[in-house]
Image (cartoon, rainbow over all chains, first blue to last red; front, side, top):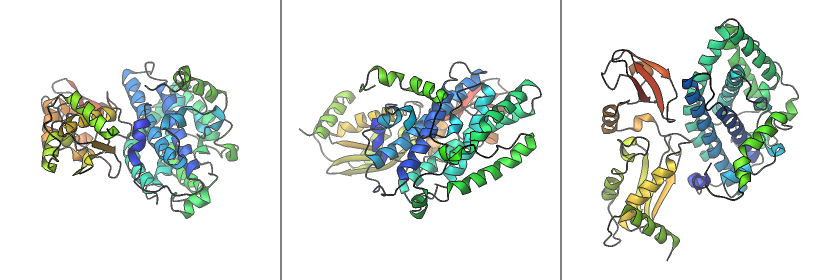
Length: 266
Length: 172
């Protein structure tokens, strides 16, 4: 990421509020963006169309950039040396991304389904942070939403395309939604310090509220396309822990260079 | 010798600009110097015309510049910092560059001069999709191929009139 120099972006802008849960909030958001960004970057060079190769690479670059900025805020809270330490120097069990992102890259329909479920959920979460009482977070979110708009537009067009095609594309999309559905709501896994975050005005509303809003927002599109609404979340308390085999493999991939020469600067 | 002075020395050496002495330049002089720093991905634009220069201050501690990243993950940011440090280092004062999201950069911050420079370089300036015109023949008969192009800030279009593919800056 060569991120260390960018950590300074917000330093001294505003004191870090000593609120329980801020670390968990930032880590969950940063890990989500990092893991989906890295997963999507696996399409670089092998996407079904040249335009999609470029689009998926650009999306992945955006998400990794978002992760870097969020890890930057997390570094202020935890006093971590730099964002690379936060991104790479952890065991798989220490990551706090949503289980929705733990299904492996899968086929193109899986990628589109995962991205659609994640982007819509992330959009609701970002909206609840735009007027966060912690200015550095509110400012960053104000910038992120402008970019996420393009992501949703792009993946929404693909969802339509796969859902309205008969035969294999639609079958594959349905299979992907079937596999991901029980984990889709894990983006809204309650955070350990959530009440404190809400009291401090850092997070606008409880995750449970945001999940209801997200499900209501999905309904019109899913109804129109005749797609099954994601079912109730399976094992919601562990929605951001217990990452499985697919993540263990991905972790091996994204830490490979880092591990090859620990402490090197690039 | 302080670290800051060392950095300024290095910046001066890289810029190869002769320095007479470290007098404090006026804000106008600093701004004029910034207008000579090209954006690395869109070199027809200066960082000033791109609208990423948010704040410039000059005081006894040096020259302070706050820049707005066009995209959160813009990989050109470090290059931009280096180019600004090189150019402003010629004034012989420490240069402090900070990236901030204090206000979001939007494509409306590109100056009229910058918009014309983009069009002349074959890149449609940012506007709503339906208002994009071909930068080569000015036709409105264009279609967006993909919202995502070769850099984070560009989309891919095709002109049905002159049958040229072209890029457009994303409105954000």
